[in-house]
Image (tube, rainbow, N blue to C red; front, side, top):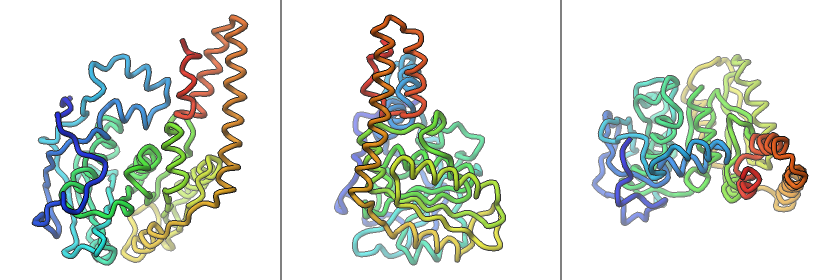
Length: 332
């Protein structure tokens, strides 16, 4: 693993920080050299794992600031429209299911229309380790494009196809301060599970308030449509309401054509803020449930029944993820 550099990228950069002479067009075998604190092992553990899982893995870390990948060995595909919009480019970080870094040719005219940069990493397919490669590569891709080009921070998105879409969903959930929406193409999961745990409360609330999810799946892709339905239900249950499902006619499990990709991006860029009263009522519901479960575990501790309390804490951790972080003391 590569140690954290002394200088890391901030979350966002002003236009004056960007390199106005950076190349545009379709670029292959692009290299990046800027690391970010967002992709450090400790930060990913905090955002993408449940508290108990992060604690167990963190105990083995010599340095939580370690970076999982060596950027000097990584390559990316990049497409940059020739002209930036007045407020800066948008950005779509794409997590592929395949190993090669590629920009689907049928998407380029749509990227031009939206003034959207596309970036995707090589060796980041379904066979690659999610936390050791796929997630940090996507985060580093975003950080480096933000460093090189004038980007409108409100139009930074993550997306993917198939297994890559499921990784994109995890990143959107854990990094709502970086990604403001996700294009989930033929792959999704329920959130609030051991496999896709909730992030800490401040990040979940930001995700609820400012992130948009677009599900884009072929009409004949029955298994993924069912996955989408289960994912949307869970997302709604966790108070995320800015969601649009799109079904692509005459399509199976395949990347979208030009028209479908255009529909997906059009939907992604139409943020629909949640009703504050509805959002607050939904949040209070799960807060009450969490308080009730924690009190149950505390009662078991006070009775000296620590083994049963530990079982209850595991259940809390599995369901509430990062929301349960303030209750670490129950595990001591």
